[in-house]
Image 1 (cartoon, one colour):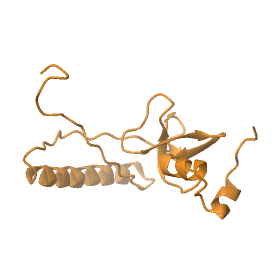
Image 2 (cartoon, rainbow, N blue to C red; image 1 turned 180 degrees about the vertical axis):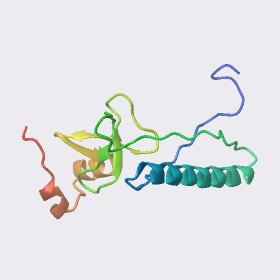
Image 3 (tube, rainbow, N blue to C red; image 1 turned 30 degrees about the vertical axis):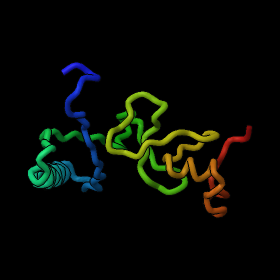
Amino acid sequence: MEPGLAGPRLVLVNFGVVLHGPADDDAFIVRLIAVGERLREAVRAATAAEPDCEATEACSYHYLNDPDIEINAARCLACGAWTTDHYKPDQVAGLISGSALRGVLLCEPCRVAVECGEMPADVLARLPFEEG
């Protein structure tokens, strides 16, 4: 179906789960497979209950703290949530969208709170903003 023509709007919905896996490689793989399968089963059950939804069966992994892999993911310096900078390439699906504000990576809810003057003063005081 051509874009813009009448018909259903298809939307891929992603959720993220960060696994704090064991350091041992064998134990890590076992745990990763087990968690992946439980999540796949949960998605199958959820989509089976919704007639307009279908499971893709896809599962992807992003290693967030591997020193050999550069990844567009870090913790928000205000709240600690995992975020991905939407102004940089290779955004990580399943993480909260974020961006840098005066040199500090913040998730979008925290960036908006800072810009609207709604960030608690104690949190604001500890953020290492660049001058300018």
